[in-house]
Image (cartoon, rainbow, N blue to C red; front, side):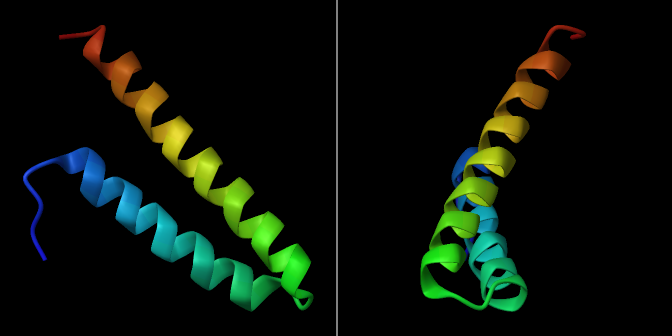
Length: 58
């Protein structure tokens, strides 16, 4: 599965990683969902902010 946008690839990767880590690290379904959503948002927003930071040095 190859996407033309690196952003879409990064979002799908962040989604899959956050789901797997939530299933591994939490026992309760509610805690799994909360952990997966927070981890997904942290990874996505962090990657976008880091991308903008690197853009400043071009």
